Length: 224
Image (cartoon, rainbow, N blue to C red; front, side, top):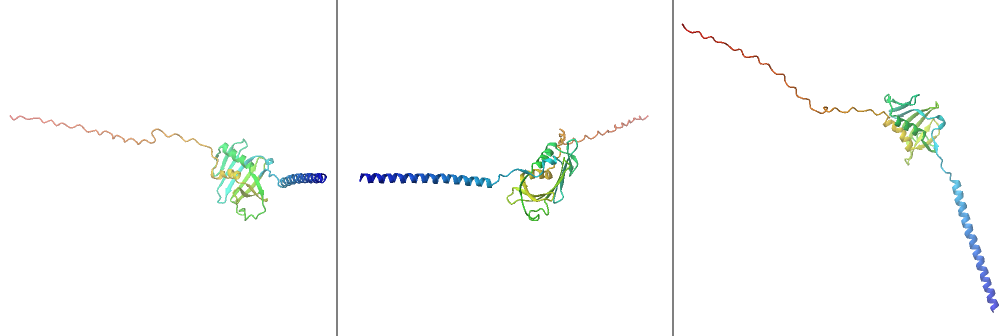
């Protein structure tokens, strides 16, 4: 009887060990499968890179002209000496910091996506803005700006009649701001004179010269 019970206990222990081994194998396989799925998912989802609209090999902007659909335009031009000037809507000296910041922003416009959509669908058949940019490498590009994307993060654009793209709205807005706020150089406003607000003094009328009274001399004649 004791031998039978011992045999039964040994079988239970063996079966228990087998179950533990199988359970450990299942747990290990589960971890392996989860790691493989995670790895495949990360490989299938590419990390978005940063692609600029304009090629750095073109150089830096030296002439930027923006025209909207109403015909309103602004243009800034960098001279051979490196000084920026406003060419439109009037010809005048430019604020160098503001003009240079706009030129830097042009080179920093990012592409968010390429799309296959009709020009009429994204507002490029009748562009809201036309931007013409000449670079120091003697390359001129024409950028058509259409509608804002439905999620308000970009503009539909077409560069040199190529494929329709979406570019970063914030970056392009910084350039389009030249149209509403041309970078005119600051001018000094003369200080108002201390008497500018004083009322004019009332002039004192000239004194009227009264002619001296003529004294009549009466000679008394005595009677004889």
